[in-house]
Image 1: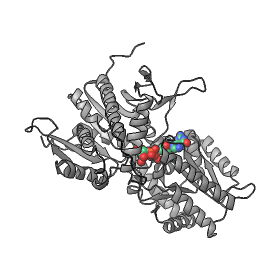
Image 2: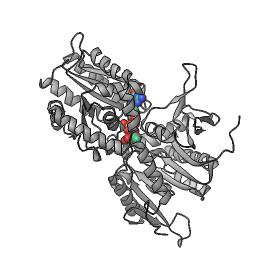
Image 3: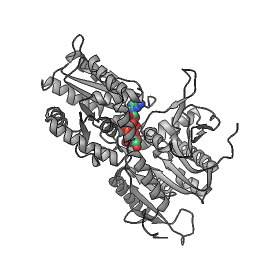
Image 4: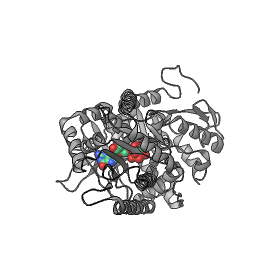
Length: 482
Ligand code: GDG
């Protein structure tokens, strides 16, 4: 059956499709890991839409296909494009600049050229599947040129972009040799969504300082490049923090299988008094080194002893072709080895290190089993893991240690706050999370759960789409501006 010519009123564009091809288990398509797909999956289930993205394999794109109500339109990437657009420009140039330059960014003109070429391919695919007057929702830092490219091809559609990662301060963004082109790419949209108001401010400052555009409150007004100087466009930027499927996770964590599995996990670790847990992609932004240093020093100081206290460290394999990630993996594994050499005994392990992918139900069981959840990024757009942990704790058990450098911290103030750069402070916060009386811990968890339940991922998507529909005005306000 050919699906060519089919068009949709809602088109999502993201670097990856929400599924990837598997060769084992008889082949077929399986959900892709990662924050963006986790968040968008429950949102898209209730909508008839097209999703444009890379299928995860080099070479020609598979034919478009359907998965339930979603029409999936794969985009091809050659091995060189994967290296230059994805691993290079997206993850070795933009990612470090957008995350406080925790590792230095690499600049290559060839990577930029490939980024432009690939963005154009995405824009063409979007233009093909968008119905007249459609809503186009572009995602993340890999596709920042797509909004303006789609506008050039299809001036009839409404275009939104959502930034899943932080938007950097102008002082860091200014390092990018292609800074103007990137901003002009984004300004092709009608509405730009960010995780935090600080990201919105950073973006508006970049528009003023680097392009000389004028900004009023949350809008930018400018003359599009190469356009008639008497015709101006106004684009709105707003903070719409992403969230999780609270109801779905709550139900999953209440299932007898997950509850039984949580008890089994604790038993298999020798029923520690305190089980600490970390779950992250193995990324230098996530603060692995600081977390391990604090844990090691607490063992050294004898503030905690193994196996009474045990740490389970789940590190999802990530971007393994990029040097900084290979180096990080070696460092983390060497540190875990050193801690275990020093503090484990036969039959009891100080750090249980797991470098693999787990099914969702297993993740929920881990969350339910853990007394202390350690979320210690040095910089993170949101951090869904923190919200997932809260959504799974229907028993009001568990405590959340949360870095103030995550987007989630702006909403989850009842967590135990830490600055992961401050190892002494991090140690104190971990001890506080362990020793705080049960009543206070339950009160905090209750407040956290209320917050995530009220601001779940469905509400995020609705708010985003309403903002896009009414831009440049705010939803519910009469139209303003040109
Ligand atoms: C980006 C931004 C922003 C992890 N291991 C497994 C697994 N995961 C899931 C988690 C969570 C997702 O992956 C990771 O999301 P995060 O938000 O924590 O981080 P990023 O991947 O960096 O996501 C981030 C996000 O986009 C959304 O806007 O919050 O700031 O960097 O859902 O649970 N899932 C399964 N098995 C694993 O082993 N099933």
